[in-house]
Image (cartoon, rainbow, N blue to C red):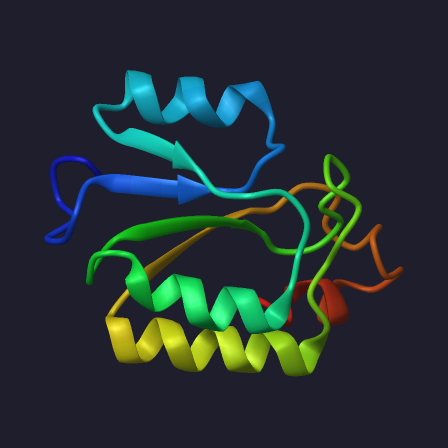
Length: 111
């Protein structure tokens, strides 16, 4: 990604997040910046547009167990619109596939 992605090489990810996220980005030539804890859809759709166009934002696709908060489907739709407008690149951490909701279709919705 650091070599081929045409956008900003700054990666934004939530706080708290797993320590391996910081290490993965650091050792792959990307820099990372943590965003605030919790999830507030209004704050997200106001703050995300302030990130540089073509930046990368890490999300947990589901089962964000370090935070315990997952956006609802309608909230993901709002986030998706903001991503499209700002040409942002979503980078999904996908663990526990199929175990969060009990089905792979539901867990794959975000992606």
